[in-house]
Image (tube, rainbow, N blue to C red):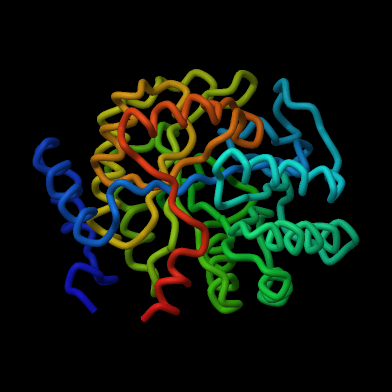
Length: 328
């Protein structure tokens, strides 16, 4: 294993990397990115809300929490054929990973979960990497999803352990880490990141990156989200995330986890193409495409295609890591 790939980072080491003068930090991150990844390649993912709103949790940033008065309309679990039609459309537009999100606190062993299993099987048969984000789940549920063809499971930490209770009180940080452990045990790849702009400090961001980079295995995907401020949520009046903060987070994540897919996630509608280009230079190599991220706006497929053409980026193929292992 290269000395670059390590799980024993200290908070102090990460603090020093994070606080490197910005242009030097971008250079170091770009150099690390070039060493381990094809810098012209960006993974294109599509995220669909398959069950919307009515969530019993109190995540302060989320318009899907039942307790907040937002414009989100509650929608029951979508029909399987509708989901598969959306996945096919996403594939035709260039997506290679399809993620299905349900506004649940946790997965329950009922008919709705049976239907999600059928959706996973269907999307897998389309030749796409299948990801789900369904809340907390047990080891047995993770195993069922794995057997159905699930490639990745998303379960974000959101913020640091210390700041967590300011944002969510309906589940603990350890609950989240337990779900990640259950996903790992089932042999499903892990997608786990966080959100900046929640009122956290720079130290909170550093501590979240410390937790992610010192897991027994680095997450295969780390989404870095800029808070999308939604009217009716407790965080609606937070200031817009500064682009330099986003670049600093992405660059630090790239240095700490060189082989991980670092996803430039929520908040892209408020970024110019030039600002997004800086994020790619700093090591981002994954995006969500399509005009919605669950319930919040996102650039269209056409806008992203134009950006890729301008910057000379190409979509990463599905299952690339597996193909590489077979070739070896």
